[in-house]
Length: 292
Ligand code: SAM
Image 1 (tube, rainbow, N blue to C red):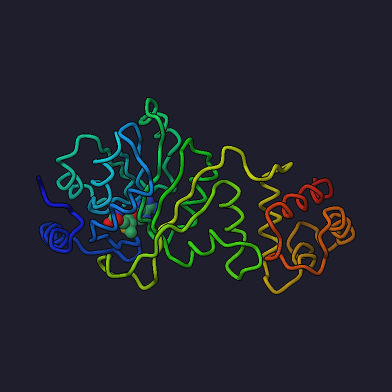
Image 2 (image 1 turned 60 degrees about the vertical axis):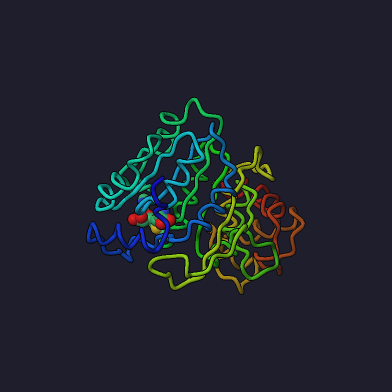
């Protein structure tokens, strides 16, 4: 048996062997605690018939744990310098494919189709680069990938916003976007000490389980998200003021917006952060005819 990558000693050995220096701009904070990694992988509930997609394998700490539990792992890594290192560290495993690519530019859909066609389910499991957490999550969700869910490490503050409930200060358009596609849970709070180098912010692991059907049906998804983003544009403003200032020609259409709010049974003096996803759905459907 070889030693796990995710220990301080082995990680240091690998970094020294290749003279690797961390790039802060790429969100490189590697995990050095096998126990935490195992718990992350537990939350993904993989079987030997599962596929796993990893974003940012680093030197392969999480990748190797995934390879032990899934049938196949595909990992997207942006940093060219890590490719020869991964080839070395992951050489004991035959079921891993590393793709050198910025995941935001990659055709993940095609990769899922090509690599995981015969498998039972696919999970995304990642210790995300924190500078692009939200764009990565939104890409994975908006592309409607045929995945069962996502288990990922991220900034605790972003995790709080994702799983926030109406009426809290963390609740916003990110909560609604993610909750539209998934059931979101924070499953672990993670101390800084399990990373090398240690990040400046606290971390958490969240699990997103994709809905079979979205919790609300709307006439137009894009418009629904536009209405939610507009409603939170300035948190201290009322929903009416945000919608009139943010929606196209909103100022001229104030009467229409008032009519739609009334039709959706939402008081104009409320603030966006108090509206449930159901209320946003009613509101965007009521506004829709005035903006199309
Ligand atoms: N998975 C490793 C671990 O847990 O130790 C490394 C995690 S580290 C937080 C984030 C990784 O994502 C780094 O390896 C970084 O180079 C990579 N990365 C950053 N931006 C990326 C992008 N846009 N696409 C793919 N990988 C990216």
